[in-house]
Length: 284
Image (cartoon, rainbow, N blue to C red):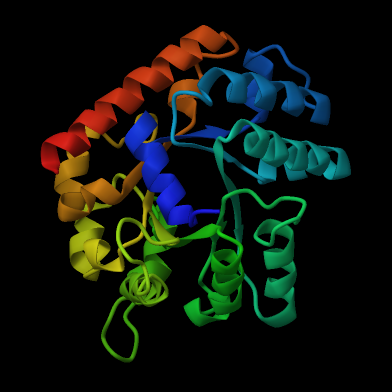
């Protein structure tokens, strides 16, 4: 199997740099006239995947909205991951795991190792128990042709307290996370590495203040925050500059709000994906 970075780069080139969340939030389930149950979450996920799977580079099921339904909900998440594999749609599981030692190894077995019940193509990770605590999970991902996205500069205001803080070396925590990603991507022959970062669409000032080297980390950038959270497509070039080709925009409400009409969702995803692809081509 090709590396995750190579598979993602190919999908972005073919379908545009858009990732759509599969987020069966209670309010969305209600608006779709689906029950707030595991069965409702399954129908929501099935409709979303069928509507947008052919128009986006990846989908991103949010684990929390399945976990809230207990074992039945987690069975739905497992089903989604395997359905994505069958349909050859890249699946980024948004579980934001982060721990140490054998506990982190257990998460890696579940979410990153071939045959793991929730092993999609990539997993979001939290590095705030120390970024090197994730080294084993990164190794497991790369050994199994999978990827990870490390939380680096998120849009929520509380994140700055940790992410903007300075280490004893007078480098921001976010910059340290990006530097670790660069190390783990060092053997990338070309294109995208397997270790990416999560960077909000609305954090242009933070990128400059924290000194994060986005082009230098060589991995993909998962970028939430376009639309309902205030980010604008037109601002992406200024925010990411030379790293714009690495950007994979993640959106949920902008597409899911068109549901449960699959055609409306597909049209919205296709239009946004095309717009983002043209933007990257213009700045290439």
